Image 1 (cartoon, chains in turn yellow, red):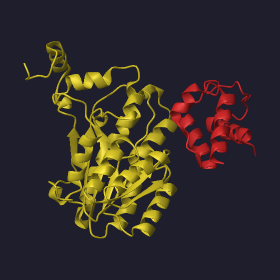
Image 2 (cartoon, chains in turn blue, orange):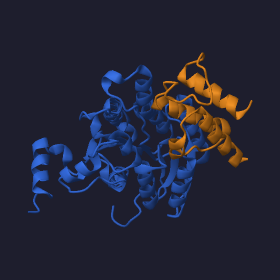
Image 3 (tube, one colour):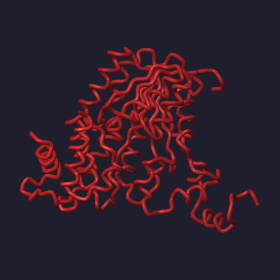
Image 4 (spheres, chains in turn green, blue):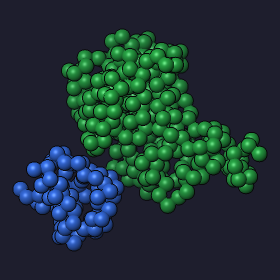
Length: 270
Length: 79
């Protein structure tokens, strides 16, 4: 993508764009020249701050409050986008929520909440977004390695992310004739506020960077860089893929991690 | 309707316990409220009063009396 602003003049919606990974994506897309619509659920001040940082990069930024677990709120959000921008070029499905419980402790309410926000919302957003993508477009979903790995108390979110990834593939095929590229990224443990919810009382962040082949924790900007590439024309022939961003961690075994830990440093640096 | 009454109505509706004895010393634990209940309570109050509740502020709130006082303060700050 070089130094050119490859997304100049585009209009992008980033769901859950006020903080963490969503914020990093919104600012990266803005840096590439795209106007950004920042959807948020509760933290208007954080959304406004991110929007101002985007404006400082010379683009238009707009914030919209919407709980994506409610279909009518999604409709309202897209009505507002249609009225204000008249089109949409990029949809980043980033907003996520979830009940942190083991499978046997999950109730239907927590399950439905998690599935609604993390999986069903993408379907509803995509259906509305397509109508605004008259000249084609890009959709990128933000998944998690918990879709394929089993992590403690991550059951509902992990299953919802698996559904999101499957939907990414189905939409990639269905929307390809319309010139719309659909892909996703799946990250390992990214250093954000949300991570703390699942790692309270654990040593996961430290453990992760100690056992990641790349030698450090994943930062939100690592995700944003790949997402921006998937939003560019340079990735036009990548369809329905989930790009793993984990510094190589998911390719390793527990034995590898223990060996590396014993060595007290990054493998290959001895 | 006062802030106290509104908080009481929203909390009881969301935790689905219409018959509970709701007093200033009632805690979220007494209400058997889980994390999803609490998020929904906060969202309902934010929408009702157009306020922004900081989750970290609630770490020092131990019961409904403290919770109501916090919401009253946020509403007053907004004017």
